[in-house]
Amino acid sequence: MSAGGAFGGNRGLRPVPPEKGIFPLDHMHLCDLEKKEYLGCLKTAGHQSEKCRDFSKKYLQCRMEKNLMAKQDLAELGFKERNGETPEGKPTERIDN
Image (cartoon, rainbow, N blue to C red; front, side, top):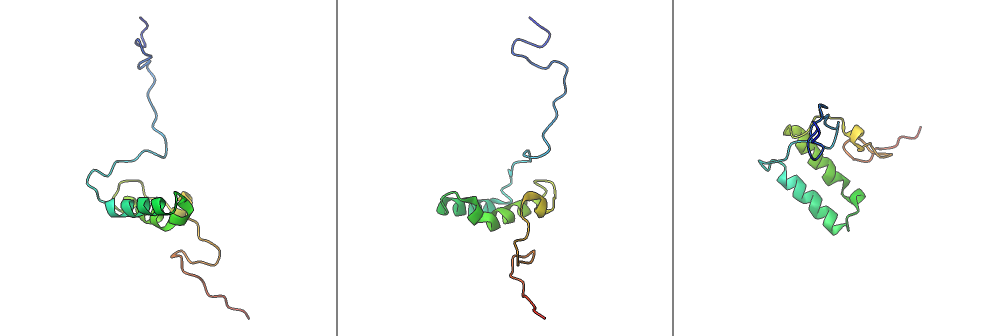
């Protein structure tokens, strides 16, 4: 049998976790409401995630506030402002001079 083990076990290399995609589970159910709203929206929208962006954003904000994931600018997570909207999602007024 080799030093790495019968099934290719640890061969002296230290595993490196991925930058994103791994975060603590919500064992205390701190963001259950937001999660259920998002999943409910996906179900009613036929799993078209674009229609549920606001719920997704709210869920991620909850996770960041409760330290269940690293705080990060929402723009880096794909929540950039749409044309003609403020960061809160409200339409901007156009002033013509």
